[in-house]
Image 1 (tube, rainbow, N blue to C red):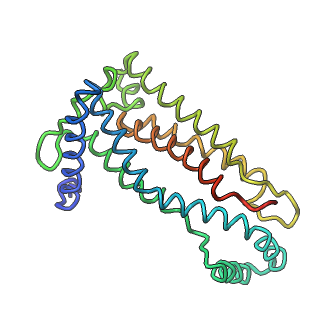
Image 2 (image 1 turned 135 degrees about the vertical axis):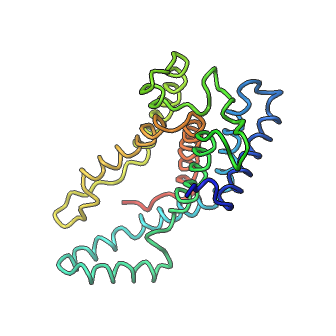
Image 3 (image 1 turned 180 degrees about the vertical axis):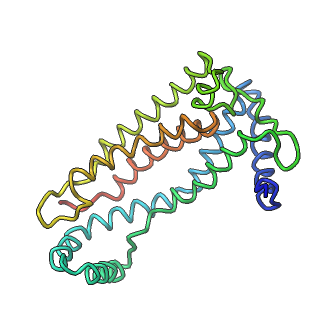
Length: 250
């Protein structure tokens, strides 16, 4: 079964295609041949603006987890030999505080469908039964449907392809490094500490900041552009919200 031909999915893709084409036409007087790329940037900014309340909820959740950290550590010490009791007491603590250990996941979950739609729009020659005009659009001479990995494997990578993707990858890597330094998780290597609070997990969390750069090498240029803008926005938003919702003193 062709999922793209499934009516609800086809309708969503067709609406997204029309939106991007409309934005492209609107931005063409200003952006010229890069109008389609600019429309992806505008789409990203719109999505991130809509998700600002979710970002605020995420910042509040992080602040709550910071405030509850001493109580959680005490529970871990008290029930370290009884995982089931520890889980019950942990959930009770969150319930008493009217908080959730899963709060703040919405921004990441909400963006997944948008990334999937952008990925699909710049991967298929036809959308909802008509030609996909977005595939003819370019950024600095590189088609928005081009992926770096695909171009290298097929031998079609040009200097422009490498240069454009290199610029995006460097930008993502710089944002990832700033994020790693600014939001480095606290390390607790005490004997009764949770394994999730150790130095090894902190290093793993830091390394995960760079996974977006890896993903960007395999997706179409349009999706890589979306990822670059969204990680940059995320960093700026987190820096602002951390000032508004600071962590409790250690």
